[in-house]
Amino acid sequence: MPSRPHSVSLKDHGQQLHLSHAEGDLTLEALWLRERSPDETTLDSLTGQRLIEAADLPLDLSLTQAQLDGDTLSLAFSDGHAASFSLVALLAECQPCEAYQGMTFWQGSLAQLPEADFAAALEDDAALLDMLEQLQRFGFVRVSGVPDTEDGMQGLIHRIGPLRRTNWGGIADVKSVANAYDLTMTQRGLEPHTDNPYRDPIPGYIWLHCLRNAAQGGDSMLVDGFSAAEHLRREDPEAFACLTEVSPGFRYHDATTRLESEGPLIELDSRGQVARVRFSNRTERVPALPGATLRRYYAARQAFYRLISGDDFTLHLKLAPGQMLIMDNYRLFHGRSAFQLEGGIRHMRQGYVDRDSTASRRLLLADQLAGQLEGQRDGQFANEEASA
Image 1 (cartoon, rainbow, N blue to C red):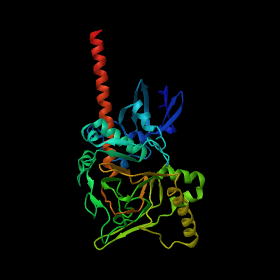
Image 2: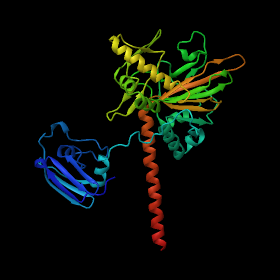
Image 3: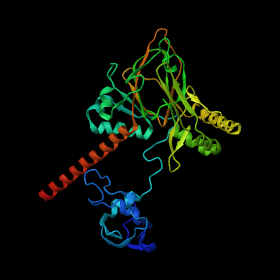
Image 4: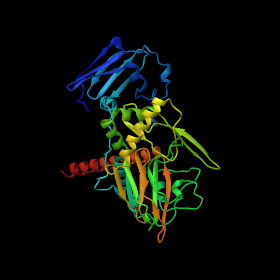
């Protein structure tokens, strides 16, 4: 964070506030400051939600006075409103977000897998936070000690957020069945893919619990899609650009369901960072685009597929009974090798949990545990002072 500003001044007839400090200058709009004024007439004290209608503020709103006293910035506005801001909080809000904050990109050579223990995460908030932070960092985590029952992972799901129900129900079987309604339910190998790109919204996290895995084959394959996408951006920027611009369709139809959606294979956020990847050869339906666009897209898709199916980016592992993978379906590609059932059984159970509840749980736990630690430190300091 920049050092504390040593002066403030008004610019552009008061429509801008200029903060000057040792590491540079910062200019803020009066209208932007007014609509986030941290007082009880502007923001609700309990929820932090805005009480005024920001769209009704005059577009020529200006500042009439600005005074800095330590960490307190006192401002008066042309609409008669006055408020005091915490300078530390204001500067923190203006700090640009770090690129891919909290993420570690990886390739197939990843030596140490992110691991968690089911019982610990179920009972201890610190262990649960560690599991969720590893999930955020790597895009997946392997959990051991999951109860050997069909709904064994349900207890931990309840610690994070509601189970996402689909047309297949809640937690569903992933095993070879007769008259399979999806290729997942066959013995066929599955190419690297993301789940359900034909849904809106797309499920955020995949929970895959192993009950039996004695079949020959059936190894899991994981690929960090963000790592692969950034590699493509560096090595083949034309292919990368194409996959961010063209939005193919995705479709799943069966006797009772019609699911259709669309989206680019590489989706960017407002800062140009990769926010989501898609790949589903089984369900993709490319529209009849102009020939030049199609040829460009097919070449770009092929380049991306060669990356995500290659050994350099692919991590191979085989789940044992009682183990579970939690995978970020916006970041991770996953697949499996073909398997044979002669003399063996492969039975997985799979469910989905959405991104918002998962992120909320992680951020809330981080705040709560940080607050507890700060309280313990304050208590220790008070005891030391009392005994001095």
